[in-house]
Amino acid sequence: MTTTVIKYVGRTTDFKGKTLWEIIGNLKNKGVGRYVIRSVFQRYPEPSFMKIVKVETCPAEERRRVRVWVEKTFRGHTLPKLNEIYRTSYKTDYQLIPKNEEKKLLSLLEQYKRSVEVLPNSIEMPPLMKKFIIKDHERKGLEPVKEFTMPITYNHSPNRIHRIAQGNEKPTVQFTMGLGKPASPSLYEGVNLN
Amino acid sequence: MLSSNNLLKKVLPNLIQTAGAHRKPRWLPVAKSKIYRIPKRPVITEEERLELLRINNNYKTQMRAIRRFYHQDMIKQKSSRESATSEMSQRLEAEEWTRCIEINDKWNAQVATEREERRKKEIAAMEEYALARMEKKDILLREKIEKASAEIRREKELSSTFITPETLDSAIDHAIANPTDYNFAIDLKGNVYKGRDTMAAPPTEQKASATN
Image (cartoon, rainbow over all chains, first blue to last red; front, side, top):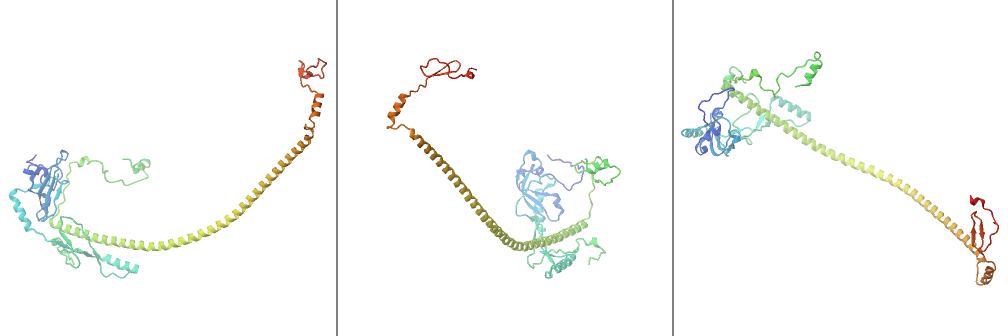
């Protein structure tokens, strides 16, 4: 089952590792209690790993797959519920954490503790839209607008830890209609951002 | 694949010039010359990646906000328009209803007068018919009575020749005096010989035709 030499042919890939069954099938007690990582999630500085809680094998037709319930930690945030891995279990992207490195991984969790982000609940309108709305209200004979803001909606995911600001709460992240503050200022050298 | 363009090209080769698709159809496999080609992956610096990510996320957030704003606006406008139209439509409906009732009443009155006239005519016709029938029956009855009375008169006239107890003796006498013999014989020629004891006598009447 285990291959020592891996020779890549064809298109390049980001995946690095084995399928989940290749790892789990060789372990004592089907690897319950062990930690595995997805190598693509190692792009983030925060630790992302999964602790195996329960394993169910699959019939012969699905020989590359396995049904596993894990305690998932994504970017330093441990999800409250167990996650089932089945559809993605065939991906050759799983790596096992040796038992002597588990402690190190868990200690990283303390180091990269993230605070909950508070997202703004409204955003200023773009300049042309402001003018358009003023004209539109004049044309329809409505009272003139004073506040040129509109509410923001967000896509939610259990992997994210954020909260939308309520009332006049000060958000920790700011979204503007302009360019905003560059993430890499070196790209804007010699450009007047104001 | 035979598309309409290809067909046109075959029929009118020099008249029509069309720009065909620049791709192979989706269901064809990878071209032979491209099977072993490995496309290069774009190389992007970490700085640029982060900045692009931030800008794109920012753009998506802005656009979502704008889209939501106008979506809500549209919903509000639609609901207000619907409520306004519903009031208007209710009023219009009530007007329509009263107008319909008026028209209906008018029609009803018209139909009632027509019905009265028709009923009158019908009753008159019925009366006429009944009278005619009665008259016909009267005539029939009168004829019957006349016929019967004529019969009675005839019988009364005949009654004078009836044999009564008073006239019985004379009638018997008369009958004895004038016996009637109904017997007769016929010869081969059809001559009739009346009487039982009548001797062969020269025939009283010639029946030549009977022999034939």
